[in-house]
Length: 324
Image 1: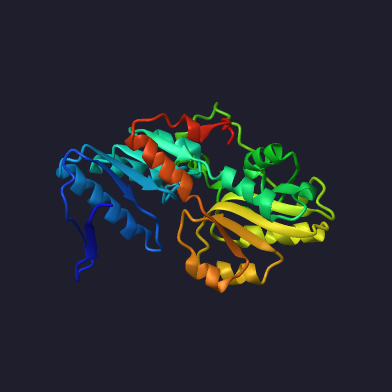
Image 2: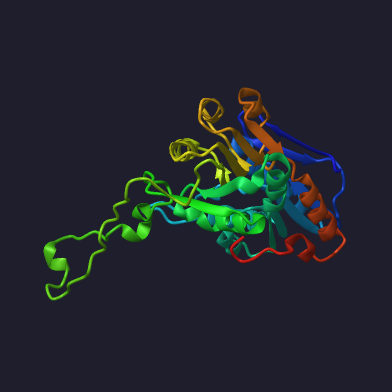
């Protein structure tokens, strides 16, 4: 383990001092995302650039949770921030990225360096098999149609049934906030040729909340990649309870658990929330005993070992399909 000093000046500027030679060496920078995500990003960029200017042979970033990954689509007059962050990392000098369960796999295309997007699903599947009593009587639940593919992957590997909740309130992934639905400015009615008749999309109207699949008297396991704002999970849990679910588990890779999430989970119908340690959440666990942690450090350390020794990474992607 190399020695580096990272601190903030009185004016809150971040300063990095590498305290041993990295010339000609493979440097692995492990950076987890704290609550102050912007400071975390600056620390990473400055550290990468310091290694680059110190003539490191290669600089590999190990970022279990890639920040700003939820901002990977155009939102009206916004921007694709994850593309900007990818460009900044590459420009700073990063030569390889190891991460886990990107919010959208297409984010890998934002980089012009190799990206290894590892999966946490083997660890979560193992937890279901070993820690959930009578898991054979469980059903895998997608809290929205958008997460149905992930739920289907879990269900097929565990040989379980699947249920999908449809008709929930509008969420952040809605097409209605996509920039393509923002019409161009029209200076006057004469700006559009009178002979043109451009067809308009019919507005979406979601039906009342329905559960497609049988959850009565069974253990419901809701799966997703990120649990941050828990409102949608709480609404899904209430719906499942109304439909007769016996117990409700929530499984996610990244447990951001921001704001009042621990208190809301503790007071909810959810029996247990299982997340990995890609993001530190020790304080949230003290506030809510329902939160459990699955350790995924083993796969990250194996990825680091294989890259350093020039070995194939395919072993870490066994039986992983395009939809996983």
